[in-house]
Length: 246
Figure 1: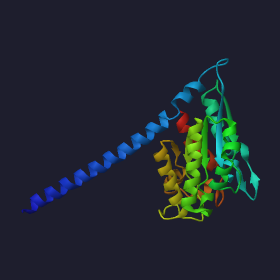
Figure 2: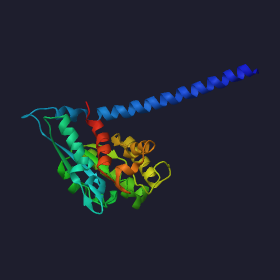
Figure 3: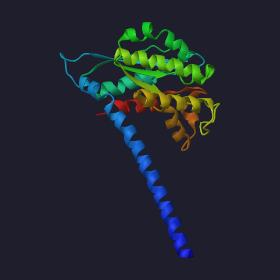
Figure 4: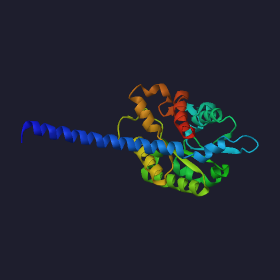
């Protein structure tokens, strides 16, 4: 076989591999964008309804200290936490809407504890959209126990009739976000898999912060090693709001 023919075959293989990768990446992007724009389609129509035909829409945020608004040393900044920054963005975008942000999150709690009180303290708020964010604290109970608790909450919420959006963890500066084998990376992957399994929404905070870390230090988005600051909360709220765009 001539050298020219060999080079031609090699270049052809490289082209085919590159083309297949590009197609796969485009399919992933399109699928992800599709659920982001369509998952809350009916709710977005309701958010446009004017008085007196409009109704109250409840956004419920279930999780640990981050959605609760803890920043550092036990101090809270609830009005600047991502649940309330999300409320601000939704209210501004849908000026005729009546929207409540309700936080059922508790500082220090993990998913098993959140699942135990789910029916009595979460579903009682009649959520139209439920956000679940337990990844940071689930490191204390491990992947298997966390998965069981998440699945219980997802199933109960879907049976109730609410839309569910899972949130992967925000960073902990004590872990290297660039690595794939850290506890937070593994919990993030599990949460992504659950979103796919149950065909629910996903806000991949961990992946977004990971991409951000390649451009600038994450320290500027943190109030302490495992709590985001106002800038970090806005970053998450912006990602959540993608589901509410028309």
